[in-house]
Length: 422
Ligand SMILES: NC(=O)c1ccc[n+]([C@@H]2O[C@H](COP(=O)([O-])OP(=O)(O)OC[C@H]3O[C@@H](n4cnc5c(N)ncnc54)[C@H](O)[C@@H]3O)[C@@H](O)[C@H]2O)c1
Ligand SMILES: [Zn+2]
Image (cartoon, rainbow, N blue to C red; front, side):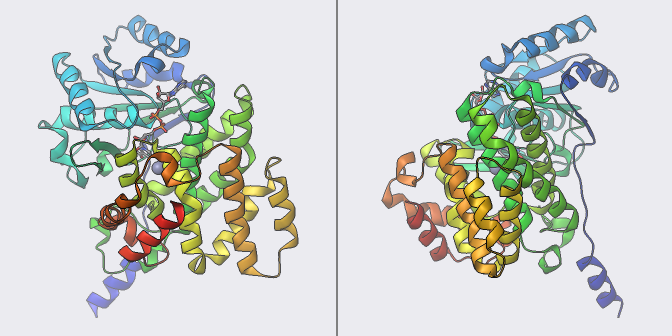
């Protein structure tokens, strides 16, 4: 009786987590010194890259930190899709500089290195000690995450992704302790993103939102101890956050890509990326990400482009399980969009057939892909046809992503999806 009661209770419980504190808005990065001073720290490790560190707002921010009597130790040699070695170098810089906190400034690549550095500098050892889910034993160094792209949501998420170049795979570290103490989302920092970075990171945010929205319902995630799973499955709050992220991406991603100085579009995308991060880091990401990790490791494409390429193919596979959700996504994506006007007109008239309405979501995603000049085929990224079974095999091993996908997928299904995208 007691056991049944517990089981029932657990199946209807969801939990939500995010960065402990969020500051959002143009100019909010100026709050960094005062936020840092709350932690009684003095020597922040600044984790960034050579492009971002030279942005005028970032130089101003570093000057403000020095004026406030902090001694920033600068590590500015992060690279996109960072290897484990990059994280090790950041950690060495932190140890040499005797730092007591970490500030990550940049795209997801820099933020993930910052997260890993804050964990290892606190708990010793090296990154590999903490790979997988829940291997970080407790709180990490105080960490402020300041995104300069609108895409990954890493500023609020519980993961850090590195590339194991020797094994040709991406390795994720997931832990409740990886969520930054403070996320400072200042959309003005994204104004300088070049169009391809805007496109790739922006479509990554859409993939996060669509996967979070359509994942298996949390009540179907039975058989996995809620304490032992990295993702909850979708539930009311994640669906709410993801839906708004999808609407904002539909309204503003193409605009931000075509008109980089459009501040409203930039603001929308910064919010969309953060909301999608809040959604996926609780609900989960699924099959698109499972396939992208090996594709990205083998081809060195950007995470966003790989995801953007794969999204419609995975949606076609998931369609039988997601008709209602896809019909909703079609509405969300097109309602506020001028660029997806054709899709909007078709969405309006297709109300009587759920499958046709659901198909419109896939059509809208393909239109978006084309408008953003995302390369359409895996062969365009440099993947070889003979690598498809290897990609399917590696993707199938990432259980947390396969488990939460709305439609059960076999390794053969993954091969078929990859062939359709090749
Ligand atoms: N931890 C998570 O939750 C999470 C989620 C999704 C993706 N990721 C990871 O994030 C990485 C991708 O991050 P990303 O898409 O943000 O790109 P990125 O961090 O790799 O940056 C791409 C390029 O854009 C440049 N750039 C960044 N901001 C700029 C700006 N404001 N002006 C000019 N140039 C700028 C960078 O210098 C870099 O050359 C991947 O490694 C991916 O695996 C992590
Ligand atoms: Zn992603």
